[in-house]
Length: 196
Image (cartoon, rainbow, N blue to C red; front, side, top):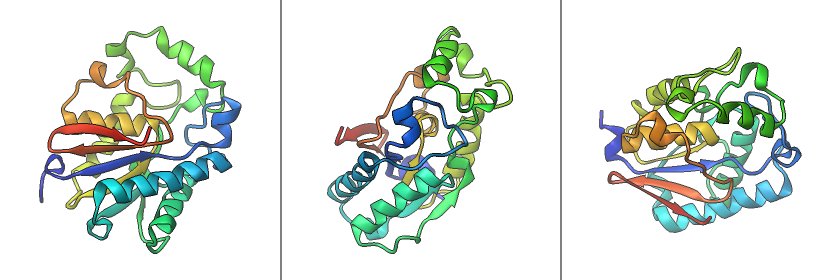
């Protein structure tokens, strides 16, 4: 089984959702993609085709939450691929915010900003997960990859995929932000963002 760091990974965050517009933290809850989010998914498909070249040689994985599956299906439709031919995997789900789920995103960020980065990595939300816990579960999926892959996921899992690939510490990884529009390519020990 090859080391996933020898592969090329194309990591995409789900398109903008209603909860993003309304300003609440969805975590394992869900809300539908906005029209803007649907357009972002289609645009990310075109970026993927441009950057990756041969899309037939890629494996496709998405978080099992609706917003990521909807994003993946829009991407695959735009690429002319069978819509449902991908693997939905719970290990790519967003960080479980526990009691902070459905709270205002600004309130969640404010409470987290009081914790130093090196501690925040290991501090779980009440009744939920820490970034370090997400790092562990995403790492189990990455260890199973055998081919170049497209991963459609969420903000925190995207951060930890990047951290695994680049060998970053929690403190180095935690401040990274990827918008809904754009594609993160991890290849040959480097990262590059396209389309944002």
